[in-house]
Amino acid sequence: MGSTDGLPPLDPAFEVPDGYVASLFRLAGRVAVVTGGGSGLGAAMAKGLAQAGAAIAVVDINDDGAAQTVATIERQGGRAIAAHCDVTDRTAVDELADRVVAELGSADVLVNSAGMAYRSPAEEFPEDRFDAIVALNLKGTYLPCQAFGRKMLAQGRGSIVNLASIGGFVGYPHASAYVATKGAVVQLTRVLALEWIDRGVRVNAIGPGLCDSPLTRARALESSVTSDFIKARSLRPEPILPRETVGAAIFLASDASARVTGHTLMVDDGYLTA
Image (cartoon, rainbow, N blue to C red; front, side):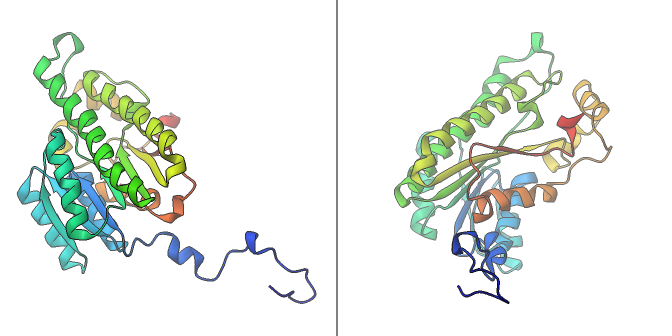
């Protein structure tokens, strides 16, 4: 590059080319898979990633919800398919990964949003509820990471975004199983990032605070030991809206976060600072 007004030449390594920022957050030509994409945070993230240019595989056992998400994406000019899959079933998840690559051409982004919660004092926590939460929140994150991770490793690129929680970093009552699984998701994210850092695959997580979504509204926003504890420590009274997590998802999915891996990005309205 030549000098400007007598200034010394710029080192290209330190330059920011024209149009650089505009390309950072674009996902055109990429395929994103969103589990739990039929409602709540997963649906919002699927729609947001589509607006950023990605083709979307909306994964859920809620077929009607997945179809609604796909319809919204298509109405907004995007491309999406709905896929029924129990993410706790290894065979089903492996088949899903094969289907996505066969139908959409690749698997560049994975967002693991499928999850559940149950409220109970620890000494009374039902074993069947504990098993279900561990299966969906932890195994249902691990298996898609494995299946789609293999696809990404084979193509030499990819970004995985797991859904953690403020519960991965702090405790709150009557949520022992949920909090335990979200702490595990934080650690899983770190380990996978460490293993795959030299092979083109980044693994990060988003840690939402108390969110207002169809899944959580009836339970998390009504008065209870758990929700009252969380809200009493929140800096603002309004819960986080699903669409307010979309920016974090696009950042972690895109080249804007090319040097970010093993990180949990909190979208908690400052909860952990209190």
